[in-house]
Image 1 (cartoon, rainbow, N blue to C red):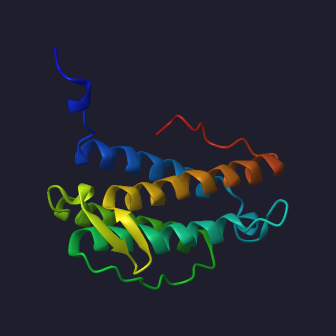
Image 2: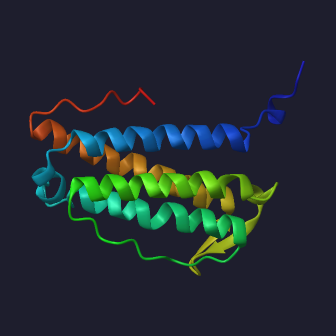
Length: 157
């Protein structure tokens, strides 16, 4: 019988899980009418395109920091159309695919200070960007429902 403390999530499994979430977020972006993607909000929350740009400003820079130990923000060109936003998302996904295999073995367990501000285990920093995307994608679901649009099934990743 194996020790339950020996159970781990491999980097490949974690990557697949995250990319599943990213694929679902892409479906949410696609579900929005163009105008609503950039302008619709509920209760003063930011439009979904603004939230999506936040995801893009976090994902690749975080992975670069995980790979290189140099935590540098990078500018993401502001998308003004749904097509531009989806293209930026797809470029980001391609870069994630290039960076992920370069994360050093054991890096998730190391402590680091991400972007000169957030000290803690690297896995915590990584999980934050996933949690942030999931949280804000929930706002996208509220927006879509308020527009009378059925959002993608959240379990279809």
